[in-house]
Image 1: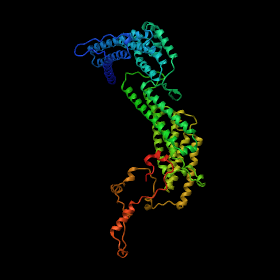
Image 2: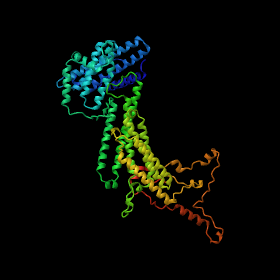
Image 3: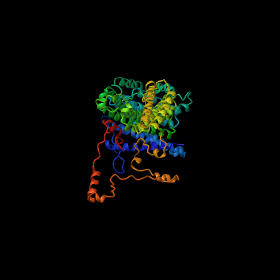
Image 4: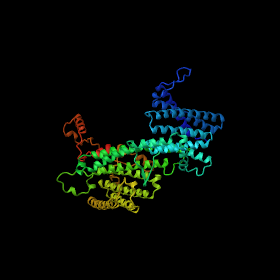
Amino acid sequence: MADTGECEEQNANRKHCANKVHRLRQVLKITHGKGKDFKTPPPVPLESIKDGHLGLLLYEAERAWAYAQELLNENVKAQDGTIRRRALSRFRKAITWVTELRERASALYQSSPPQLSPTSYTEVIAYHLMISGRFQRSKDEFNPALKDLCVCRALLDQLVASARSSRDQALYTVFSDEIDPEIRHCAHEIGRAKAYDIVAVVADLAPKNLESVVPSGTALLAALKSSVASGSGRDHDLEPVIWEGKPVPIRSPELVDAFLRIQKTAHVLEGDRKQSTKLSATDKARTHHSSRGQLAAFDGVLSALSDAEDLAKKLVESQQGNTSRSAPGPGARDAVFIHAYVSYQLLARRIQRDLLIVDGLVQPTPLPTGTKALQTRSQKQQTDPRVYPAVIKTLDTVLQSLDQMRTLSITDESQDIASALDVRISFTKAKRCSYLALAHASVKNYGQAIALDQRGLLHLREASTFENNAIVPEVLFYTLDAESSVAGLAETFDEDTLRFKRDWYAYNGGNVDTDPSSVKKVKKPLFFDVAFNYMEPPMDELRRRAGKEPLKVEQPASPTTRIAPPNASALGARSKIDVEDEDVNEEEAPPPPSSAAPSSGVLSGLLGSWWGRK
């Protein structure tokens, strides 16, 4: 059965080519006249040929070929000889247009001086051989079709080797991948041994038939190589994409453009990071442009990776919907792997950005001059307690990204990467428990803080069991040293637990109050839940549904309500208007300035609307 996705693709290609043809004829003024009378346009002399004239012939040939493919797909369903004859007729029309295109390109290339480069002329010949070979294969003439397609594949391989940019190289590779199944089919139909080995078939037939199919083909290839050697080098070259020490070829031109954008933004990010490492500690504390600049650079990289991930996802859907396409060759990766790789890089950059935010949030607050006693405190003791909820939520996003990364297919295939990710998941959970314990300790919940430290030690012990001394380059985005990071966090747990016990003993002697009436008064850390900050939860309704009686809460007296004493009449004559004016003045009085205002602007820049919320 014919592929529905391929039929729709050919139909869209034919409409696109038709629009291009109409536009070029209007621009070049070579229309067929007005009215019903058809007027043949005059021939264009060689001196007046422009790029638009060659483009017009190319779109005409592509339009006729797309219509022929569409009719052949309909013939597979209908099995009608009339439709097949119409398809072959459109194929002959495409051959006519592409032959005229090759003749004009040959005249331009052989003119003195040449008006067409060897690369462009080779592209025209390769396209002509591709259309000719497909037409002969549709007529079941497999021998001449195999010769044309093998020579076309050889020319495309030479164009790939001499491409000026990564995008051109990907374009030539796409055309090579399209004709590979046709070469295999022709070789199989003529009974050739090892028809599946396309490289061997092309290497055997292409040199023998090059001169017969392409006159002066050897001289053309030599001119192509010399033009590449005399060139100034490759433009917009894509750096090799490496995964587990092996290169990952990008064979889609759209993905090449997306990866070039990722590469450009990544270079900007690396430049900002190198510049920030050169600054001293005092410069970083004085100006926070380095952190904000890195966040902006990370946003650019994440935007480029997000676009590449959407594009890779569309390519996966297109590959799954089109079953006629061949599998990737040896060393190549399919669209599913490319999509998983882009998703991995997107999550890795997101984790790096979140860790940068955490580092910016836990920076110690500048100490006043002359306070030597405070200088002996640890960095966590110097951090503002209001920062802990934001750090915890940021670590939650890091855990979410690590969990998503762990479920990707490319991580399941590698035991080293999976083990390294498990270590980082456990370490991040332990780090989150540490800051959550500090948040509870800031509101005098020392029992909860000690329990969280003990849970963090369990996560840290789990991370040590997964420990692998092998260096995995794919997880270098989250640097984790077992001797410094894991051991340092374990020491932090011990110090914090001892400090919490001492503070608890100084607070209430280490007593645990189990009175139900006092449990309700326990204050919990604020995690910026907007709904519970601005509205009361329907506790009475919930208790009624649970079959319990609603709580009887005493309404506190309003601060503006004045209770008159029994002998108010004997205190002097004060009018009601004077009392109301005094109440209004007290309500309109501005609140006193908060002494806990942040002394640095980096927290407000990182937290946004979170910072300062009551």
